[in-house]
Image (cartoon, helix red, strand yellow):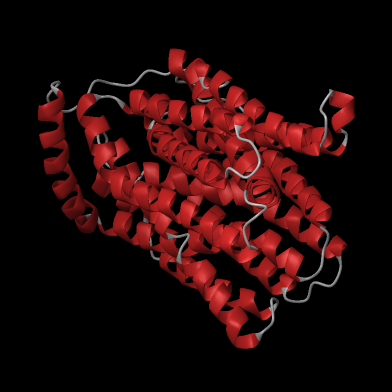
Length: 423
């Protein structure tokens, strides 16, 4: 995949941040923290209590970002400080993740506090990382550059997670006293990985000067003013606003599949080890698939490619209702890997083309806010359907409605008119 002709070093440096922070998403969020929290730090708590505590921590982190992302984005645009804000949130995430290494058994409150801080660092840094795409790539290259970032994220997160799984399975080979020590070392290794591969972005990516005053007080006043104006502006940009609504629905479906997949597999009686293998399959399939979607987005346009991905997700949900064996779960992991990075990358690229220049951090704050809200409705619908039907299989059907509504709304987004309106 040819890199954009603008500045290849900046594009690669920006893309490698996805390689850096995806390690946290894969190793900590999706992989080891939920299991280790229950079995090590919160072993004395009832299973329902530890689940509730973990759920509250995740929801709190999302809520913090929902409240802060637009304002911080506006402030970053005023000061020309997107990269500085990214590095602040990254430092928070790295320190919190590394701190998990030193926590002893039974310290579940401390583990939750560090996990919450790590989540805030991860989610907050993504607001500014996403917005920097407009500073490293020309508009005609957004699809390819965004897809390159997601592809490197899948590859980097997958490689580190695979190494960590081997460490946990064979701790003595790596000099650890047991699997628990290997898991704690994985947390420390993730922090070092995240920090190390952030350095290219820190040193090589440049951003233009800010829009407003350079004093912090003036910038805060300017940020509040810009925030009010942006609410009105987003509403007035018809197709940008319509895309955000469509994105809210279909990304809710995507996130629900991600969040509920392991729980769904466990409910069907599949072994936890098999589910870890499925997660690795998704990561490594996602690497080349995201690159392919970058090509398709440049060739067909982002909207048709996103609609293709939504269609595959709908088929995955239907197939999951008939799942009987672990091999079926692996097949669906492949299918998800084929489209997950594509739908995320092209959504980011499409939105970047529908917003005015100079307000990217602020508007990507709204974009990320919508994405965080998108993790609420789907899991609620799945849980409600499971309670009503008593069947984990039928519990997935409401996700089809989310994909259908999102796809219908997306078909009504006139990309060319939206880009023209955004200038």
